[in-house]
Structures are given as C-alpha cells and as structure tokens.
Image 1 (tube, helix red, strand yellow):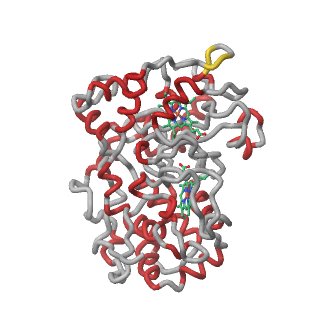
Image 2 (cartoon, helix red, strand yellow):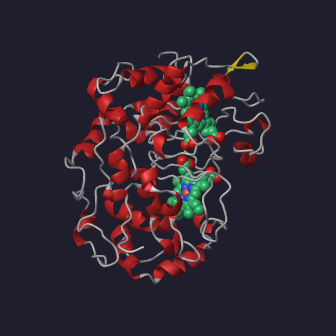
Image 3 (cartoon, rainbow, N blue to C red):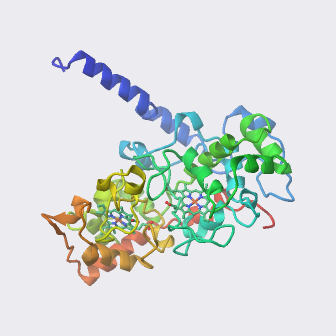
Length: 403
Ligand code: HEC
Ligand code: HEC
C-alpha cells in the first residue's frame, strides 16, 4: 500500500466511486430489496403513489396501487458482486412502480406500430420467455426481421451494457426507440409516435403518475420502457430453489435429479467451459464472442457495427434464463432444439479467425467428446432455468382487456 503512487490511488478511488457506487453499501441495498415481504401489489414508500390518477378500467386491467417493480425481493445470490457488476440499471433512470407500469402498457400497446397491428409483445412473448417461437419475427407490414428475437428475462444483467445481438445499442434507453422506428418492425417516426400517443386517453393518467405531468415525449417513452424491461428479473426457477437451499453452486442441489446435477457440473467444467461465457448465477456473458457457428462469416455481427475485422461473427452472449422456452436458438434461430445447440458445442464448432479461445485447442477447434448421457444431462440442467412464476406473473402480462 505504501508504494501506491498517489495519482493511481486517486484514480482508483474516483473510478470506483463513480461507476459502481451503488454496490458498495450492500446492507443499504439489501434493506431496499427486503422491505416488501409479499413482493406484489404493495406500494413503495414513494410519495408519488398517493395521488395516482385512475386509469380507465374498461380498457386496462391495472391494480389500484401499482405492482411492485422497484423493490423486488431477490435471493441473496443475486446480491453478490459478480451479479451486481452485470447490472445495467442506470442511476438516472431508477425503476419506479409507476414508471414501469407505464412501460408495461407501452410494451403491450399496438399504438406503437404504424398500422396498430403489433406491439413489442408481438415479438417478445411472455410464455416464451419474452422471445418469439419463430426464427424470424413478422413486423407491422408482414415483412420479416433479419434476426431472431431475443428473450428479455434478466436482460438487466450484462456487463458490456450493450443491446441487440450485434450490440449496436449503447444503452437500453437507446435500444427501446429502435424497434419503434424500424421500417420492418413498427414503422413510426418519433414525432408521429408522440403525436399519436398524446391523444390516447389512458396515457394522460399514466404519464402523469410516472412523470408528474401528461407530456408525451419519446424520451419519456424510452425511460418508461427501460424501467419495465429491467424489472423483468427471473429468480424463481428450480435452479434458484436449489441454490437457495445449498448456497454454493458447486454443491449438488437436493431438489435436482442426478442428471440435472451432472449437467450442472458439466456446464461449469473445463470440459465444456459453458460457464466461462454464460457466467454467474444469472448465466450471462460479459462481452460479445464468436462461438463458431460459421466457418465463413455470413452475418458480420459486432464487426458490422465496429468495422473491425476482429469482431466479425461476434454476437452478444445472451442470458440462458428460461432458455428452454426461447427457441429457436442463436441470432438467426438456426437451431430448433437445445439438443442441437449442445451438439453444436460438442462436435459442430466451426474454425474461423475470430473463434473464441475458450473453444479452441492450439489452432484447432476443441471437441467436447460428450457421451449421450452427458448431452442429455446438459439439456436437463438447462431446463432447470425455466421460471414458471416469471412467465405467468401478471405484472409482466398484457394489461389490455381487449386486444
Ligand atoms: C417485429 C418484431 C419485434 C418487435 C415489434 C420488437 N422487437 Fe425487440 N427484438 C426483436 C428482434 C428480432 C431482436 C434482435 C434484433 C437484433 O439483434 O438485430 C430484438 C431485440 C430486442 C432487445 C435486445 C435484448 C438484448 O438482450 O440485447 C430488447 C431490449 C428489445 N428487443 C425490446 C423491444 C421493445 C421495448 C420493443 C417495443 C418498443 C420491441 N423490442 C419490439 C424483435 C422485435
Ligand atoms: C466462447 C463463449 C461461449 C461458450 C464457451 C459457450 N457459449 Fe453458448 N453462446 C455464446 C454466444 C456468443 C452465443 C450467441 C451466438 C449467436 O447467436 O450468434 C451463445 C448462444 C448459446 C445458446 C442460445 C441462446 C439463445 O438465446 O439463442 C445456448 C442455449 C448456449 N449458448 C448454450 C451453451 C452451452 C450449453 C455451452 C457449453 C456446452 C455454451 N453455450 C458454451 C458463447 C459461448
């Protein structure tokens, strides 16, 4: 410590205090997270809720007091630093219950598309882990998207803080306005969007409750959607129950079958190295990687955005939460089943100059040599990440009475 060069010390202090400030005082954060036992309709102590305007109940089925989005009671293992470091929720757009409620209505509202035919939820379907069961999704005018829709469970956690398969959006606020303006997806300009929503009756109350007045701006729309999406935390899967029981991910989970426990060990092993890319208790990546889908790059991925050849064929490592529900898999939906995904890693990885070194051995592709039982065990383990509470939870569901 004595040798610590003063400017370096200062730099370290400044960096740690500005970037991860909110993670330092764990007890304060924990308090915040545990002050709501029943974890649902309880209103937070935020005064904004006391004067809430009522929303037309013949159109929208919303609870009298908003659902709890801001202070969700997470298990302890979501509070460890590995997971906290992945959390992308910015300080300047903290989740409030009314903000996320507005975000929920926007997410399910067909008014966000040019011809009132689709909403965000058309391609991000709750029962499919907020993904789309078709390889490519259909936009407002019947055209297909160029990539597979992404599941949104735990999209909140991603160290690189970027969004889309090719990481072209630098924040969630930026991301949320992209599909609205996309010519295939929803097809509106931002001025058209604002003009359109300004004359929809229920937004008067919803914007006022969330932001203090009924001014409809695209910035507020982005903020509200960016409160709703990070509130979608999946933490009640069989895996979570098991980890709560033993606390150590390396131990066998009493609630798992032998095959599920075997799959968990394999997932974390040096033989597969799955856990080196789909890391932490939330199973997310830290940055985009090339997992050897193609020997010759067809979709440039991150390289198409950065213009850097070393990034060609690299894609965001998505969270594996609810993965059994979000097929087909990969950025182009090329694999129908998890069995096919496992076989890809076992024997199908294609060598290419950007292949991640976790999947190589010297200059060659590393083959995993998994037995049939091993492959089944990995699939069984991935199924333990399914969270039926999350995919049926009303607070993330369609609030529109008629659609
Ligand atoms: C027509 C289908 C469609 C619609 C409508 C749509 N999305 Fe998407 N969404 C996609 C596809 C496809 C991707 C992946 C695109 C890519 O990476 O190039 C995606 C990606 C995302 C991501 C990135 C997730 C991540 O982990 O990086 C978020 C967040 C998202 N959508 C939210 C929304 C919101 C909010 C709306 C409504 C405003 C919306 N989507 C409307 C199809 C759609
Ligand atoms: C080198 C890092 C790396 C390793 C190791 C790795 N993955 Fe992946 N994984 C990725 C990337 C990157 C993607 C997204 C690729 C794409 O769509 O182009 C992905 C995608 C997936 C998907 C599909 C996700 C979706 O939403 O479509 C599954 C399932 C998956 N991996 C499981 C595994 C399993 C199981 C293992 C171990 C056998 C593993 N991964 C090892 C990087 C890795």
